[in-house]
Length: 263
Ligand SMILES: Nc1ncnc2c1ncn2[C@@H]1O[C@H](COP(=O)(O)OP(=O)(O)OP(=O)(O)O)[C@@H](O)[C@H]1O
Ligand SMILES: [Mg+2]
Image (cartoon, rainbow, N blue to C red; front, side, top):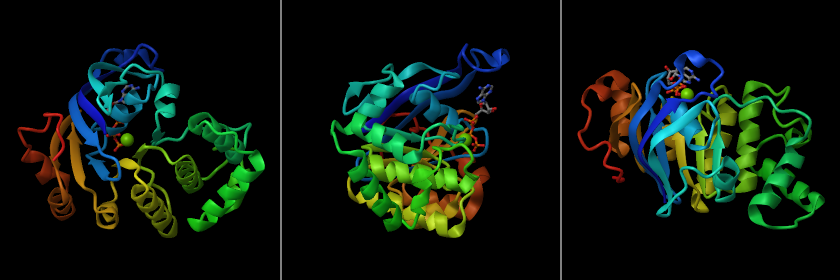
């Protein structure tokens, strides 16, 4: 289980703009991601969702100022990003940075070899990847394009889906992987998440898309507002959000939201 216990995040001294250095953006936030399950994190714009997950994976603009990130009971809060990736943690960022100079296929081969301790040849891996792309109805030619430079918004998200399918992480944190994709691509995203969930990947999905709640039937739903975790629940909370929107849902916050336990 990947568990966030009372995490607080502040803007670090490495952030591009210095004027907000030390500002607390996320406070006392707890949630868990279980293997083979889907947890969804929702909340109004600017509530701290991306800051939380970026900080956990070591984004230089943020600092986890207190709290613990635990993997199966082991504190991994301060491990470097690369080590967290080796442990099987995957983050798809909301704003995917532009990276050129290597193709998606080359990047994935290197990442797969590094994270799965295998010496699979480039050719065998490439053939498998093309099959995987076709299985999820993703154009396999994406594998021969630069990692993200020059890709459209939707293509970048599909590239992330291919990365997910290829690397098969233990825990995947997907920050708005469904934004900017067309309706067919949206089904590709759902299909890939569903397939990996069945193989044991635990997901934390950040989304504004109510249809995701219908398609993925998340086990846990969390709501953030103003940097705090204000609600947590199951399917019934998802239905409450679909029916009433965030405003009503946020007003009746629960008192046990930061207990660090699921359910
Ligand atoms: N590097 C930074 N410098 C200053 N403020 C920041 C920085 N990063 C985030 N913030 C602020 O922290 C707050 C939370 O931002 P964050 O991107 O985490 O929100 P979000 O919940 O992901 O929103 P959205 O749904 O729009 O993606 C916002 O008010 C944002 O302006
Ligand atoms: Mg965000």
